[in-house]
Image (tube, rainbow, N blue to C red; front, side, top):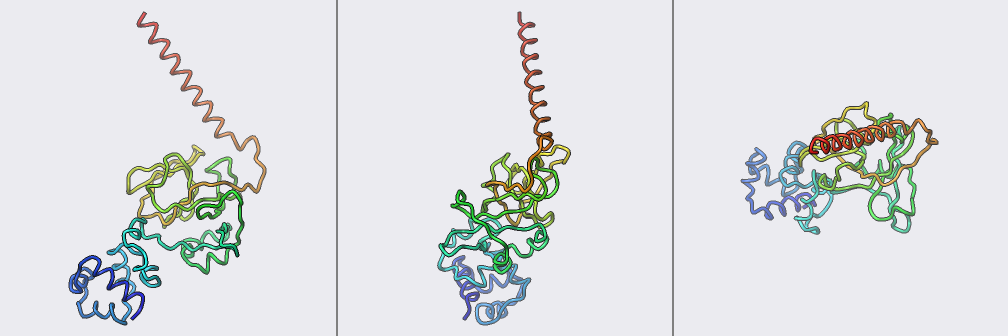
Length: 259
């Protein structure tokens, strides 16, 4: 027997299902399914169906005895992002992996690969202890004053429901890759990603496209800030002042009409 076959049998019994019922769900003969609870490995498409049905990641099904963890705890994590490879030092402290710009393209395929993560450079920051952190490069000019070449250090969060409206996050998605944006929850199934540079339009991100979310913890600047870097924020302050002045004038005018 293998860990996978043990997990498969455990999940079926946990749900009170027969082999025939699971076989019907997978659209395969019962005899073939019975072999999966024995010594035969299922093809990839069938393995994906099993993972999605039970809401347990393929990583866990193949390599971890899930009987050791309460099943209810496993299914609380969205999209089954159960196993997050992380590097630790000789004292067991988490290291902060740095994703260099040249590794961005490979991150989508390597973020869950322990060998990929192990090959990254690491740093440690004494004020970031609790949680899992990773540093991502800034690209473009959409989030001033952070310049291209700087790094945003993010703390890993497990659930979309943990996103706080108006805060900034590193967002890893299937289609867009790595993006640093200010987020707002629309519903349980989508987010709005917005740039601080107002020339860029906000856009919607479906929850099903999200692979990882890292909440802003700190930033590492590789270039000195200049006065022009704060131009967007200055415009925002000016507009806010105009709104306040307009509101005050409107209230004053309304007061005169009452008299």
